[in-house]
Length: 462
Image 1 (spheres, helix red, strand yellow):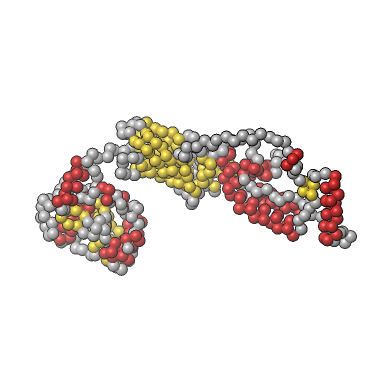
Image 2 (cartoon, helix red, strand yellow):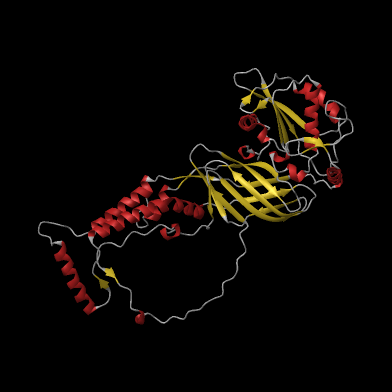
């Protein structure tokens, strides 16, 4: 049942918290786990309510870090004012007032936690969320420091799957080990994309549609002209076979047209359909030829050596990535993987017979194994980059400038791209995250350049 809950993020924002409250109202107590406790309306003025909140905070803070990391970014959440199919809430009070009555159970050096209210539409009541910070390595067990209903001074409480109770001897051993473990060093990374992303535009009517129209006109113009005195189709085919036989006596260079006009028209229609399907990829390939490849910089500001570092970058919005091909002196249609139109109507040129071909020597060279790529990317509604960085030394930075990819945006009015990054490293049971921003440069209109590639023999337009 808990699979209906989004556990990927801690509900610290109003929208995320409201979504969680709605999900809890559908699931009720079935949603409870070590990271989540659900309570109906409680009276915050009662000692028993204060003790329940304090007990949950202590138990959640006494979880092991690896188990806590499985949900809500390591946090634990207590929700008060929600039950199965009902969001009743409770009268809101200042969070400071809650802290005053809960802190005596925790002590001034107790667990870190926060509380905030989620309003209920059409009601003066609110739902209360208590959020306990993730338990860190190097932290010993948190001890209850006050007697009250269901809690005792000096006792150690742990959070299980759906209950908060006193720790067993084995669980206390684990908490002592947690306290003796070396805490992870403070991490200070920065990830930057150096350079700017370009905005690309294209007039498809002047390129794609114009090229298809011209090509169709050229192919259709090659068909035989029909008049009242023209040969019938059967007579024309018979004459073609006769000419083909005569031609075969003289040379081996041509064969008469053997397609019907219907088949020829089908080939033209099939080519157009394939060309339209291939066009978006051709546009990306073209961008890979004309745009520069950006540089990714990963900065380690700490004195810690990180091994097997992996970086994931998520760029939001209408941004697209493609492979970098370099800037050739001239780009041809073959570079864009666009399908060629069918052969024009008329005699077909034959290839030379095999016995007339020169006997060229053939050399087979052993294939060399290639190293796996360090960078991978995926295009969807946004762009996701995955980079294998390797090791990063203390107080150093790594540059990825191997010219493997380019990326661009389409559309007007975009001046910057927002993104996020996440870093993982060997021996660190944590994900380090941050934000980044890439400026969008001046728009580059590709219409004339692509039109010239599609029609290389036309005169340049002034």
